[in-house]
Length: 325
Ligand code: NAD
Image 1 (cartoon, rainbow, N blue to C red):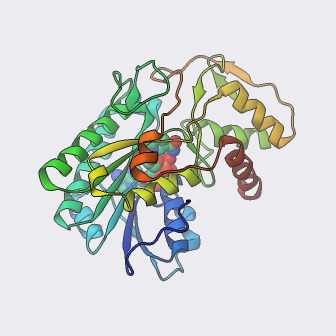
Image 2: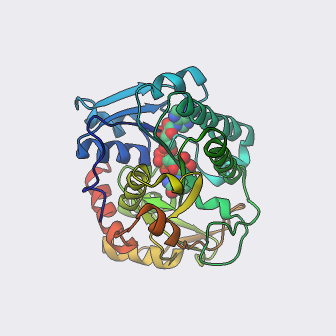
């Protein structure tokens, strides 16, 4: 079962932090389509107002511009909320290596503020974005919850600390927290621009302009690229999950694996073009291979992802073709 059949109590209210970002704006859209109320919080630092502009006229949508580093703001936005989908954070492994103190302030302090506000306001479920980067240098595949290595970047450390706090808030205060370890998410509205853009939107945009992208390393790294629809399903199912499944983290991926070179070939194929890529140095802090065991999320959250990389990339390319100016 996907997420369209999910039913929440009448009058349920959701809060999405990071609602003007890639994943947050897609969560807002999905909740509005299900017919529930949603409040969005974003400080528009890496997110864009245009990502949520089309929802502003929806009577079930409310947008608050504010910062998760401010505890008062967090308390205010949690008022009257049943479910929190906490996405606000700064992403990018290489950027976090350049500015670790800032990552600590936004990703750790900001998330702690949100946890504390959720506890104070008696929110039912606190579902939050963690990351596959918490597996660090653990070499074994597939990655399984409970078998983590040493983290390789400040970004990964912030997500690891988020998980520790979220477990503590379950144990100390009985707040139902669910950590979702996303694996390389892609899809509509993901930002293709800038030095720190994710590989898929960046490559699609360059290829659509007949430019040759640069592959870091030899392209023999692999990733469990996860289409946004699977991530929406995981978030909404976590809101409906059993209380016994709280206080833990879950791999959220498709459970497949694409080598970067193969991913590149599939992009060329889907776009029906021929462009030789450039090759650059490997990036510090990057995991070499990534592939998730998703059985824990299947069993405890009822997560049944049905968007493969191939199916998702076709839809994503259609969106970028229609929306890139
Ligand atoms: P994004 O940058 O598009 O969205 C993040 C949003 O958070 C932005 O709109 C930004 O303006 C907002 N934000 C940042 N700092 C804030 C602050 N201090 N106060 C309020 N809002 C703030 O990124 P995304 O790809 O949508 O990522 C969403 C979440 O998922 C993040 O927590 C990220 O770490 C996590 N994640 C993403 C991926 C991926 O592949 N995209 C993988 C693993 C984890």
